[in-house]
Image 1 (cartoon, helix red, strand yellow):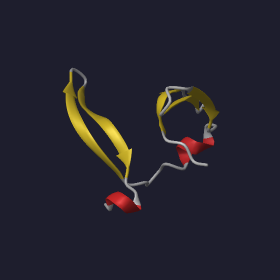
Image 2 (tube, rainbow, N blue to C red):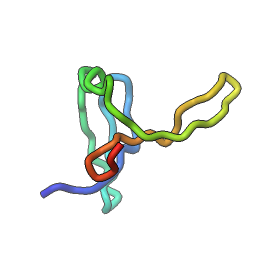
Image 3 (cartoon, helix red, strand yellow):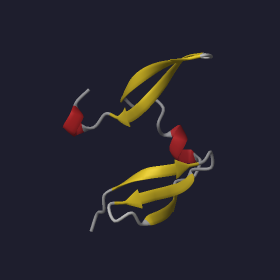
Image 4 (tube, helix red, strand yellow):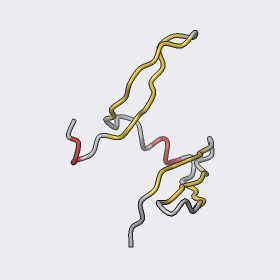
Length: 68
């Protein structure tokens, strides 16, 4: 059964925590190769002006249900 949740932490190695709808923290490990698979993936995002310049925030992957 698929569960709903959100990634509440992730590090450069691809390990992190998903907090599910029952507030249970579930560890995961995607591995570093996962991040390389994101190249050329379409996303939606907002921008925010920081002292270092524009920064993308609230990034989400474009899926079939929210067509790009």
